[in-house]
Image 1 (cartoon, rainbow, N blue to C red):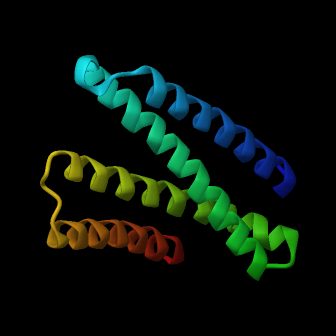
Image 2 (cartoon, one colour):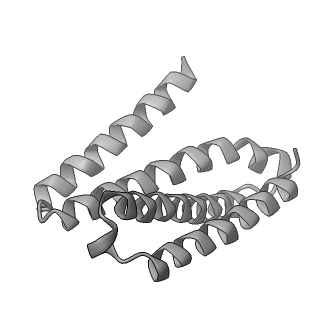
Length: 126
């Protein structure tokens, strides 16, 4: 798969996830929908954030790498990091919704995501 094909696929998935998030945001009342409404909201937000972060990180890696083959090698890293950032954001939103978010919870969440990323970086090198 070429970098252009991957980027077009990610752009299309971004538009689809944005549409899903907007529909959930406008059509579902969180007070009456219950747990299913919250799950739909957080899942659509996770997809939207993940695709946004992946596109941004791929763009950043592409700025540093002028060679398309080398930039394509960093797509996997961008996908993993974008997904981890989206999971972190959703985790912080869930904690805030439940009024459990404090600075040390945020710091522990960031440290946990950082440790997961370090695991993947060191595992690749072995």
